[in-house]
Length: 212
Length: 100
Image (cartoon, rainbow over the protein chains, first blue to last red):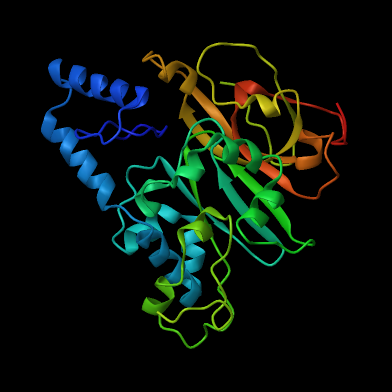
């Protein structure tokens, strides 16, 4: 649904009963009963959500790594740049791509709920929605990153971006070393979801690298 | 509609106690930051949440020093960036320095 604040929807076949699931199911049934939504609308939305994955974001990143003009367009108008690659981001009010450099690195969080650029990254991982991540990201981003196995340079500035309003954010990580000879398609395979949230970069090739 | 705050303007985030839906996290209430850009006009989420006909609000990108927001922590050159609606911000003449 097009609302700006993400919350998990109900699923028709819950595996585990939780209060949140019962609430979501009750909401769904009421909306259908009142004729505001049809069961088909709910099924279609779930199918759309399931079809989304971080591959869309990875395609944006890989193209930006190989094409400087695309990179500029991605940073100045991410919605238009996404449309160029046939990626539908119409669900997001505003879409902003944050450029990482050696000197400045971004970490995305939503402390108020779980806002996430779903059209380009799919569903958020559970840790992204956890209270621990949401509270610690804005307080001790470096400690959090190190728990994900990444130690940013002391000289680099970490900018924690809290998605409080109508914009959704994705990080453009720096291109890993040792990838100069790779094709754009091969690069897509290197871009991780976590690197587009900003919690840890994609691995350098030839160090922890796995050939695509 | 109030005037638009320029980029670089030092601001303070208002502290308001409310049990209504707001999009200003409590951890920046009372804190000082700098306007880094003007995002645009958006419908007021505080009214939108209750299905009311909404007012348009200016939205700003505001940058805070991590050390200003968490003064009890070890000093840090890292920062926080939040989008905050104009009715939560007041321009302040104070220099952006560590402390209350």
